[in-house]
Length: 288
Image (cartoon, rainbow, N blue to C red; front, side):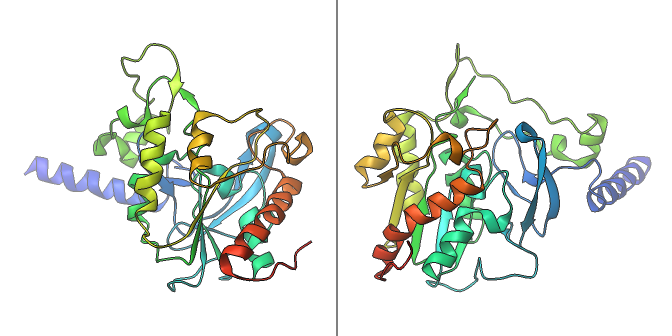
């Protein structure tokens, strides 16, 4: 009897903590050590730590980033009448407002809705496991730029990570830990390795692409300040992907965060992609 009462009490506490978002779980839902997504129906200020400034993050009922809560031009529930943009924080638009992001600007350029399915931190490992739960309708075109996080150095491969026990994902458990997440488990790997190997990256890209058979995909290496082509980049090149080598300069990136494009860089990328997208859509490019 006492066990039952205790269980009901703890369940009630968990419901209250979840409803009040205490402790604050931030902008994500899911398992931060395995697969996670953006929270649904979100509207909040997020700190861009490196630049010490805030930007607004708004998501819809499915967890996709949108420009404003009452605007529907960046996404659609219909089939075949929109473009799907897949990637990590570089597609999500870390550090910039929704209307400054390249996906939104591209939508304006080509006059076709672009759904921003970028999830910060995602490699192709999270993508191949997480996209299937996002209930994404069939698009007319896919823009895919995974690779930034796949090449990130870590103490273990993403595929070696184990899901966190559901008990440790409860709000009560987070409260006991004072909001801290459980550190990612280290594997037996000695030294730092890429989160996703070149071979696994290629296989993951193929598996993700197979989710929408017969839908054209435009692969591109996300703009960066690196010199040369990495093994991961070469995978995309072999699939006919775009490489903007030398096209983007330091002025296109944040001063203290050279991984992400600033407002100028997002404008630059949207214009660079416009001609490719117009061609695939069979439209005439009027964007200069």
